[in-house]
Length: 471
Image (cartoon, rainbow, N blue to C red; front, side):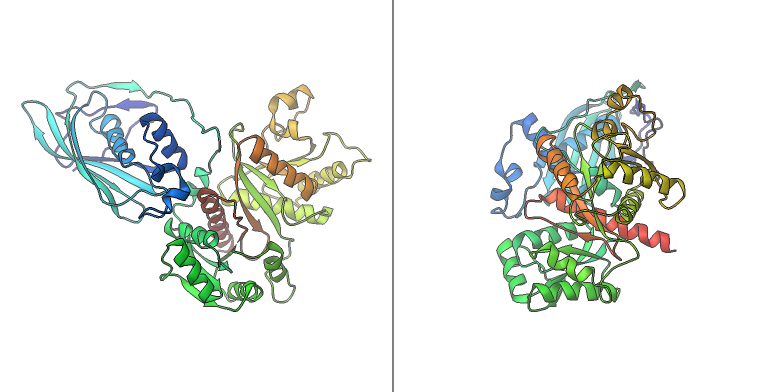
């Protein structure tokens, strides 16, 4: 039996009938996103609300939006047409059995294995199988094809990048979090359906082991209302939200959980326990919030800080805010993030305090007080994200026009920038609080499934990064 791999990612090369032996196999992996579902619906015209309407999907047996069955069938066709046998293959027949639903965020390994060859008609029967990230077979069947007899090697077609107009997605974070072990996460006061569903979805995707901290009766009532099974989750019974926040922090200090997720309580209530000097989760740094954005019109992930914690940060605070964001960028795989310290203008003006602080932060980085990134400022927003705008103003900088991290002057500016990107630029963001002993996910009732998953993925990546640094 031979496993087929592509020799050159820039070329597509088939395997002829004579080259293929019984037992030869090929596979691809693909994560299901909401954009995949919508694009498949556009292409096929199948607008069954079970695939597109989250509220309706909750009333179905699967309790959530699932993929069209033939989306998996199309992936089998992809393997046959591009990998084994590859170019020149003629599809003759396909049978499929759909064993389990494919849910948002599921990663399918789609494989075909040659089972029988017809040497007279150059036909091959393949066993086909789709297995999710939990090792469960979701689709299986067989395909009959006429295999090519001539060798074909052609450049791979470069397809245009498609983005759905109404929102972008955060696939990169989920993909980056595919391999680490799940993080134990205290979910604080999850007494509503949204909080519990967020924890359940992240658990289902292998991102977290939820530890539910709150009034047990209310949590179980919410789980019943949401139609989800929480029997596999650890549940810590406390009487109210104040006690839940305190208990979650205590569990963290005891090393029983490695991250925290906010449930149905106010952010201030949770952070009050986190920042307590003697019993909280403080470190030598101030805590700060970082949003990771996928902006359809920007060619790279964009981090924005701080839009949730520090209202009017001092220069000392900003030093920590910048370092926290750089460390988060390292955790998601960017070893040298470009950091733009924002202000209204790109020149130092003694009348604008944020320009003075930006200049000071750059000097701090130059002297090694901030490490791990390339920092420049002050930069106005336009020349931080647009190379054309930077060139027009004669700015020669490795950061200008190519920023990975935007550091706003204060919470007001960051919050307005964040919401402008969300509502005017179709950006989608996931956030996490960093600078404490463990990452903290601040969820919102408005967050959709992918945003909640991506936020948990950020927390998981931060914990893995912290473990590597401590070794």
